[in-house]
Length: 450
Image 1 (cartoon, helix red, strand yellow):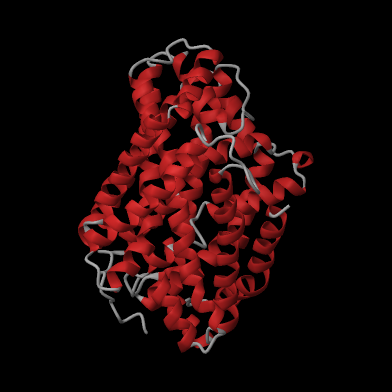
Image 2 (cartoon, rainbow, N blue to C red):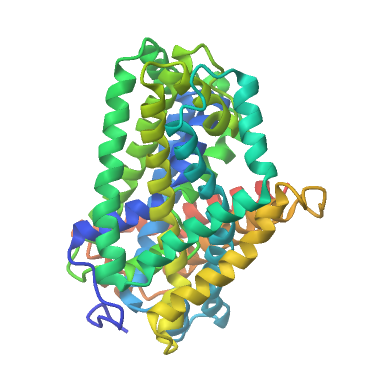
């Protein structure tokens, strides 16, 4: 199947719509929640440079390969990989790559919706002034009370899943495209507003220096693993989302410059998020390496101590919710696209996928309260789903994509889809994809199993 085939789903209006959509997929809780605290835990600026190097080595090459497959196939990841495996005469095991990505995305959607629901709760908490002049005990008690209430978590999980399904059900043109054209500019505007506010805080330069000052002595093997892992996962690779979005990418759009633009925007959002969070943290003399509690326990205290803190905090959590929403839409799309190709109307397909993910998500809801003591293998049901997708399925998917495109696709087919004018650049990308990226991702995989 060639790039001339437009498939049954439609095509993005233009290159920039794909960039917004792919950036929306990549920009999620990982950028705004995870990146700042792993930077804090791994030495600040030295870690940022390591992370940027990993984006070049593992992120961009594999993302180009995944988008390439999607645009060439013009179908859901499941059918694309089944077709391409036959066409390239590759081992049959690669036909299962699309299934693994769609299943990984399905499981991620089930618990991502629950975590994203927390951000919806915190919009209300910040807007109500709950954290005005709040102490650490108040913030901790508020978060603990939220997690302990299964009905509240279930309601938030349901609301977020409905929000996600409402966009997907309208299709590529009127759902995904209109959604990202509204959500992403809103995200960027709020990000810039909050960055402008951070510039006025007394702790801005301290936060800036923390994020960008270089101290190689703080890097260790664990830091490299974290940087590699986050650079790979932040771009939504290995779970079919980029392949699905690539299927809607205009055939004439430059694949290389488009993917690099997405990677740059994704990285900029993560860095700006750090320049928003750390100055606020330092202004309030708090610990930057606060771990996962940074967003839901440390920051509410910091916002509560600031002038107009409730307003700033509300805008911040709206920003986080939008980022999570745009990512969830892309995570669900591969499974929905496959169902549509099987003859199920998109509205019904969306309902079924979201309903099943919602049902599985109930186990994650209960993992934080009623079933909190039910532990096996890696911990709670949530811990196991997170480990299975993040540490096993996504890395294996990434390696498989790199190996398939790098070793089993005919060189002329790859070159014809990438359309790089600079042959040296093409050879460098293909070399990286064949040798460096798979080894880097396998390194993450092996360390992640430890």
